[in-house]
Length: 457
Ligand SMILES: Cc1cc2nc3c(=O)[nH]c(=O)nc-3n(C[C@H](O)[C@H](O)[C@H](O)COP(=O)(O)OP(=O)(O)OC[C@H]3O[C@@H](n4cnc5c(N)ncnc54)[C@H](O)[C@@H]3O)c2cc1C
Image (cartoon, rainbow, N blue to C red; front, side, top):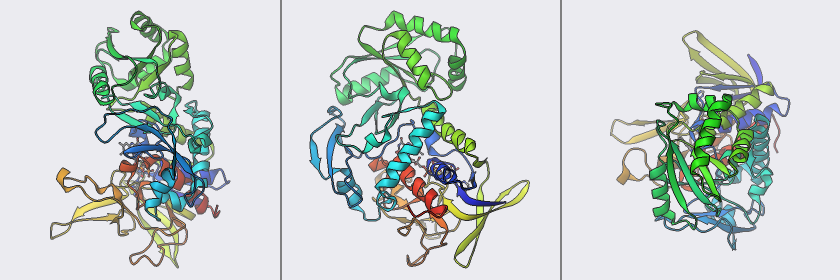
């Protein structure tokens, strides 16, 4: 099978690359083992957080410009300070990203981040799963805004772009908050959530919880979400129970099961019915907001003509004369070859399967990229041996050139002229510490997709 662009990996980076290339009229295939991290994540898009979350203002790729301090959650997690702050010299692009000249944001460039965010926002709106802010360019403005969203156990997740169904949960808002759990639904903990938030942030608004009993026994999240989307009678029953407990002026936080698919319309309906802002809080087990975002991207890619093959793992590739010719997948049915003019390697980091870890004969850990066997180095941060396992190894990643092409050992030559890497496989950043995982996947996915179809944007 011959394509213009072959994308390996169907997570956020791979899908953004595929949509970018398809938008340039390329014939694209995505080969992917699984769904990737976006489908498991809370669904918000974090561009930059760190200990002190700085809303972004980026002058240009050299890092000029000023930033603003945004919602601040201190290391000990004691303070929550509004979502808008005073301008601060530098901004995160210079103060944070600029720490490594090889940071993937800098390699991709600010314009790729801007255009990638636009593509993402448009794809989500098309799927009926709109994000806020609607104008994604606003994510790059000064003063910037950070949504500080509660997690199911009372932690805080910082994002610059969020599904509308989560937006009213922003802890920077002032309305009182009622968190309502459902008896029989596991993996959502209203009491723990409110207690932890209270202890952690001492928010300036009222915060309380209730449990509602719909008399349905044990509740399966995906089934319940589908039923709530389809069945007006079930929604009406829940609204009735909620009306009994909500106080005037409160916003209502519910488990993230209000509809199976894109649910921008649904959440508006809920808010109108209850006369209060309603928002979802993703469960710890299955995050529908993350899954909806992933499914939305796949849906849009399919509509753009992308050949999407889930369940296919690329095991090898042929590189001849410095050009990648094809990649191979192996299944019980046999081997398949996918030829392309350009290739995007977006197989993720340690979690995604793009990096394999092992122990050498002397007991020392080693890592390598999983398809081409490329060396992988700890290029950001340092392993945290006190926590054991793989803690602190998030800075592992590939070395690439200025065009995102993986480099051979020695760092002088590229593996192939037409192979571009994107997403959490890349080195020189720590997605967890920086809170930049999704932003980097979008910026580099966009750039790699454009480069793979021959456009050096
Ligand atoms: C549970 C979880 C939650 C997260 N939450 C956040 C968050 O809230 N905010 C944030 O900024 N970051 C978060 N991250 C970090 C996340 O890694 C990045 O944000 C980003 O989603 C990574 O996208 P990616 O496409 O690079 O990799 P991945 O999403 O890992 O996708 C890689 C894809 O490649 C496929 N693949 C791997 N090897 C092969 C192969 N040989 N052949 C074919 N396919 C292959 C995998 O099946 C997978 O689909 C989270 C990560 C995890 C694991």
